Amino acid sequence: MDGMLDHISIQCADVGASAAFYDAVLAPVGGVRVLDFGEVVGFGVGNKPDFWLGPQQTGDGFRESHIAFVAPDRAAVRAFFDAAVAAGAERLHEPKEWPIYHPGYYGAFVRDPDGNNVEAVCHAPE
Image (tube, rainbow, N blue to C red; front, side):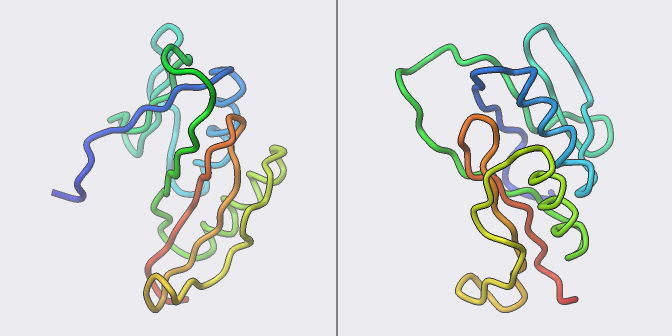
C-alpha cells in the first residue's frame, strides 16, 4: 500500500476551467488526465484516476480544501509552481523548505480556480 487514500474528489464552480488548470500543474509531478466522464474529470499517475473534479452540487458558499500532490523531486515542485503561476494562480508560498513540518520538506502553495490551497511537495533532499 502506497498511501492512505484511494481517491479524492472536489466540487468546482467551472469544471472545464479547473480541469485546464490541473492539466497544467499536475504534469510536472507526473499527473495526467485519465478520464473524462460527462461533467467529471479524473487525474492520476498511470491509468488509475485518484483525483477527481466534478461540478458543485452541494453546500452553500465556499469551504477551502488543502490538497498536496507528491512531487518526485524539488525541480518538479518548482515546475508545478511555475505552471500554476503561468495559468493565473494566486501565489500563496513560493517553493522553499518548510522545516516546521520536518527536515527536507520542500513545498510550494497556490490557489486553484476555485480558491483551494494546492501544494506540490517533495520530502527528499536536493
